[in-house]
Image (cartoon, rainbow, N blue to C red; front, side, top):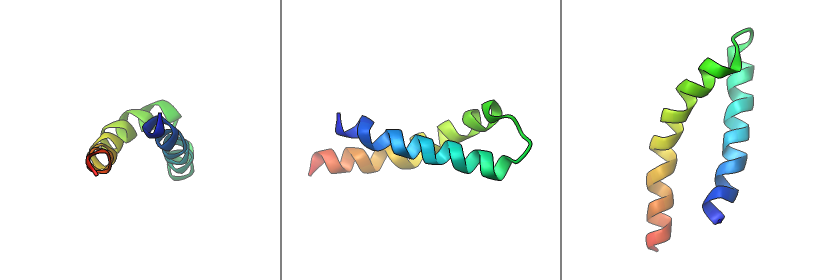
Length: 52
């Protein structure tokens, strides 16, 4: 539950940031590029947090 609550705003911020940086580019290609980047940094810290 906590992970999804934290991930939701992060996804929204990434989408908004992608649109701002992309300018005229469509949002779908940006999503494809953003998702793998997000999975890397976001995954491990949450696992460490759960361990504590």
